Image (cartoon, rainbow, N blue to C red; front, side, top):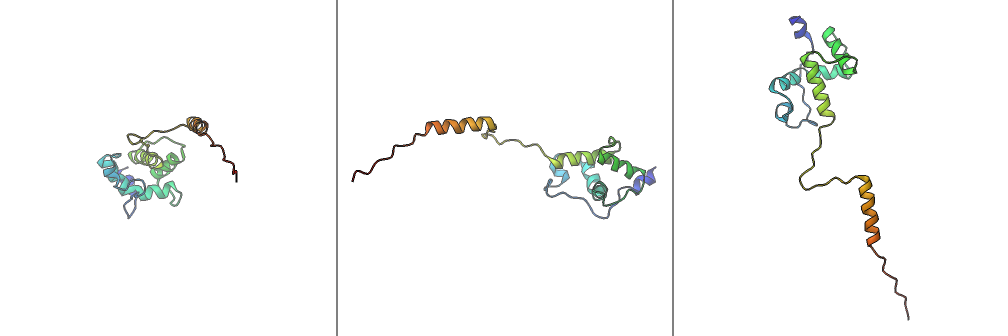
Length: 129
């Protein structure tokens, strides 16, 4: 089994996602050192498998594809790391900066109505000339 693990998820390049993790996986604070190392080492192959650009070469990679498709729960460490990566990359939570407020649509419409009510049209002056 160790030999099969060494032959799985092989890639010649390291995996980086500068769009979602511009400081790298290690510095993002989302991954442990070990998770970041495994993601960088095997991420290119995992992404190719997930996108269907590479066919699975063994049962471990076949199970990974099933996990990506949602047909199976993640079992291996690499599968769990990939699921974590996809979840974080698809939508990191947004935290409002201190002092900002989020206005709901209904509240925004109410505020617009209030502003319209407060603004009085000035009567037009007639030219008496």
